Length: 396
Image 1 (tube, rainbow, N blue to C red):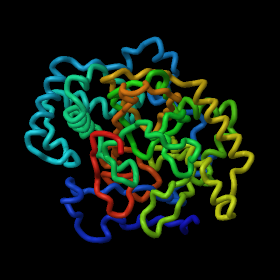
Image 2 (image 1 turned 45 degrees about the vertical axis):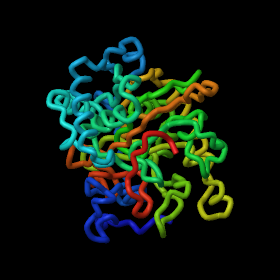
Image 3 (image 1 turned 180 degrees about the vertical axis):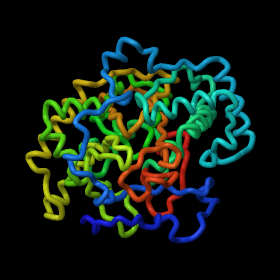
Image 4 (image 1 turned 30 degrees about the vertical axis):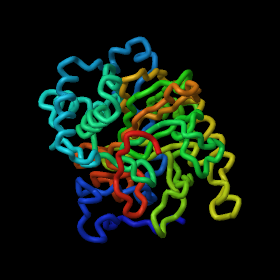
C-alpha cells in the first residue's frame, strides 16, 4: 500500500478545495490528519546515533525523588489571570472552538508558558500543574481556561472522527476487547505505553476514579539508549517502515484503513530521534492480515513489541493526577501509559479527564518530521472529510 517514494512534498489536502469556511473552522485551519510518511525521508538504522544525550534523556530516579522538578503549583496571581481571561472569553460569546491567544490574553503567565513550551519540545518533555480550581469553576469555565492555557503551547487538532478538539477520557461502557473498533480512552482498560497523534498532549483531571487510572511516562530516549545496549536487534526492527497502524475506520473518503510506517524515526536535519507508537493500533489489524491484505506481525516484530513495553515499564515514572491537576507531555520523546481503573458506583461521578492534542509546526520550533505536513500549523491529529472541530463539555 506504500506510495511511490517522492522527494517532493504534495499540496496539503485541505488546501485543494479553496478557502477554509471559517463558520466551520473558526481559526481558518483544518487538522491535517493521519497519513503515510515520506518513505525516502526515512533514515536507515546505521545512520542513527549510538547514544542520545541531552535533557530529553532522563532516569526516573532523578524525578521520583524530586517532584519539584516536574510539578508547578499555580500561584494565586496566575489563577486570577486565568480567571479574568476565561470570564472575558465567556462574555464574548465566542464558540469554544474559536479560542486563541488573541482572545485569551495572559499578560504575565504567557512568559512562563513560552518557557514551558520549549521544555516540552526540547527538554524533559513533561510537567504536572496543580491547583487548577475545577470544582470552583465548573466544567464550562474550566474548559475555557484549560483550552486558553493550551493556546500558548500549540494548535488544537482533532482527536477523533467526530472532530473533538476538547476530548474526554471517560469510561463509556464500550468493549475494550474490540480493539479494531473501540478507542481505549473510552473504556476503563489499561493503556500500554504509547504516543498520541499530536506533538503535545494535555490531561486535566475533573474527577478521579475509585481506584486505578494512574499515569506512567518514560523518556523514549532513555528507552532508546537502553535498547541500543541491550537489544540493538529490537531497535533496528523498530526503525524499519514495516509496521502497519490501524485507523479503526476514522478515514476520509478514498483513504486506506491503515498506514505503513516506522516506530522510531530520525528527525530530518537536526538528527533527533522521534517515536510514534501505540500497540493497540498494531494488534488490531487481524481483519486485514487474515485476508492477506497486509502481512501479519513477524516473530521479530512480536518480540520487539513485547521488549519495548517491558523496557518502558522498567524505566517509567509513576504519577497520580488529583482533581485540578493538569499533565502536559511531548509525544515526540515521551511515551505514556495508564493503569486500568474502577469507577465509583452511581450516583457518584465517573473518572473524567479533559484532553487536548496540540500541534507544534517546525517553523515554530517543532520537530522536522518525515511527513508532508511537518510545517502545517495543525499537523497530525485525526481528520475525517470536512468534519468541523467540536468542543463539548462532556463525553458523547
